Length: 114
Image (tube, rainbow, N blue to C red; front, side):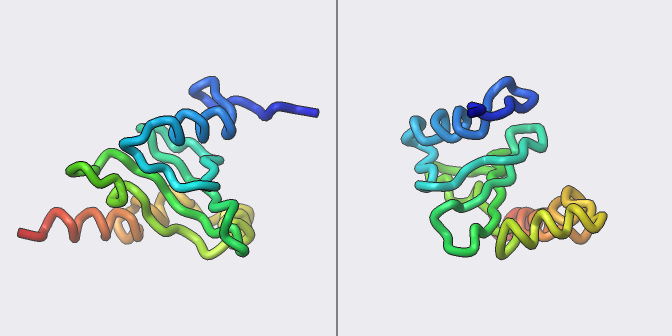
């Protein structure tokens, strides 16, 4: 039995989950398992408590204030959709942060608010 393969930070998904869960200020959601580290502390995560295993992104870089909910973004309705997009050649990073990326648009809209 494997204990998981470490990412570029040297930690497995379960180890990263444990670190995030132990930081009370993050209010890391139960069952939100980080499975892909994009760099700059950005993670794609699978919601293991959701029946469809929806995908969410954690990006602390635009966080502002005490409430960390602004660092979580919806990504794909299921891990199956997310993996299927990647396997069919979709550039997942561009889909999130490219010129028309859904997270980039959300962050940009936040910055425009008075």
